[in-house]
Image (tube, rainbow, N blue to C red; front, side, top):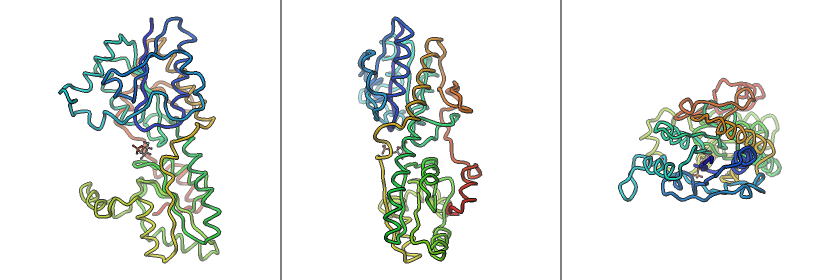
Length: 357
Ligand code: F6P
């Protein structure tokens, strides 16, 4: 009997169900004796022993459904060192559950934090495989994660919708997109949506440069400007601050969102009317696009293949558009940032898009 545990951890995204379906259907199809245990709400279910035995039928009809049939949570990475109410250690509790169920392997679908935890479990001797999920596309060693393209489509649609109203009213619009640490989503949606200014965390902006870009558009007869700003976009002055100083500043600003802060500064500097749109979690919701369904399925089927070959300690990812296995220790603890010299950034500059510099 092959016994596989599965959990979805961290912020959800589209195509989590498609990926789990890929693993499960592939296993049920190729192995006559398999049990799949689905843990509730990510690692929390593994810690507290909350799970259900999943049948082949549980994976039917979920390919095109967003969210996760298992539920997710951000527990435990942020508080990994903090013991549970009864004083026990979270990692030890996870290992206990794994052993009590006689699991052969644990499949974790998650982003950066989830990979750190998965790697800790691997170091403690558990057989772990992971699948890269995140709308941020910031997992190291894989070209793409599922969820990203679906979020790019939604964010692009938001910018598309803003275009007509921006043109009618001669306003500056700022669309704030998800991505606290990295700007992949904003960069791609900004290019796809035809944004005039794109602000990402990796390239600190100056209000002066943004104001000049707006003035240039106005002088050339353009009636509006659209800015795609990542929620983690940061000014040059803020980038020079220490973490403590920045924390204090954010408190003084009453934790106003990035787009509102930038909008107020632009209004003050240019006198132009600014409007802000924040699509927020809409970007993580709804159905996965076809690209993500195919990608998640390919990754899931490959994970099943690794399980059947007893190959563990890997994230299944994408390199040169091929599905490959990547050692978990090469992924955990790293973030894939947008390189300010990358091709898309260079092309954005060539197109005349202002990156806030
Ligand atoms: O990591 C995915 C993500 O959607 C980020 O882009 C965003 O900053 C964050 O999660 C939001 O997290 P939460 O759902 O916990 O508010």
